[in-house]
Length: 400
Image 1 (cartoon, helix red, strand yellow):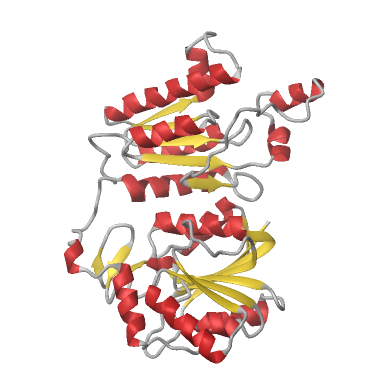
Image 2: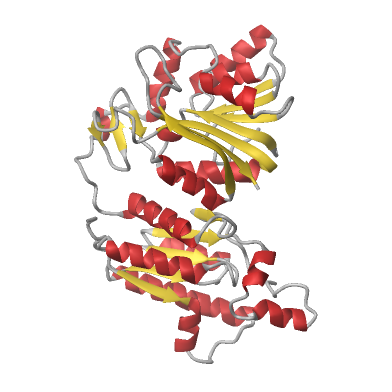
């Protein structure tokens, strides 16, 4: 059982328009956290409005005042060591900023559901009433959708509330639980991830021939002459291979790798490939406005879960409708899973730190964001390099 969060509780703020499924998801999140031993109080915006009576109307000024009351009530409860899960529209950026500044442990979740789906659900009859009044949509003038939520979930279609709740609970536990599990390795005893990779690429020991995954994707899933973004491109082995047929943009956090790739592209006269230094998922200049496909090999297990979510959400935003995301990563069935020095968040240190990924959970996270899984396989024998034969997951998903 996971140790309870002490000192201060965490706030899980689940927001979205009416009909997005906030209450259903919040109830599942609350129940699952309680089952794991967390002290949890579930709040619902509609219930709170009933409790506070008729003092507050439905005009934007009243709704904003009520949203601040919800925020400060949650803060007071969290300060007493109780975790709060709240389902509320309350879509005002200033309120969400106050939440983030006031709560040490704050997780903001936006259930992004199309108007047509919300209108079909219409649990409160709001959309039907608006239609009878000849209003085109349920009034949302003055409401502000979240600018930087921690999690965006497409809570409709094949994605069920249970999957959405599981993603929220997993993210909350990984980021905010006081249970740190096995002893942590002192920071000074371990090279940072970037130091490791800069040193690795300086040695120029990485293979330059294309990976089996790049060849597999190009032969089976990639149409001719499309624009591909490869994040975590490393020494460019797959970027240069894919650039033989496609337009490719590669991005990597290692400045050594990017400088080496730019020099190689210039020396070899490769014109349809660009390399950018930066972290995909965070603001980076030079990225294209949209691409047809996003590709990454052996990157997802090298970043923590919160960075994974930023990457997947950024991929969704950058892809054209119908665009593909193609990923290969080490899973938790790999033989190294329990051999290294164990860290938090399913990480182990062997030659460097890895996060071994549960394949089914990862596919569920993709679906939660709004991707449709087109191809998935977990096995060994797919990424053999010398004596290494890791168990990897391969996923190809489509932006609907």
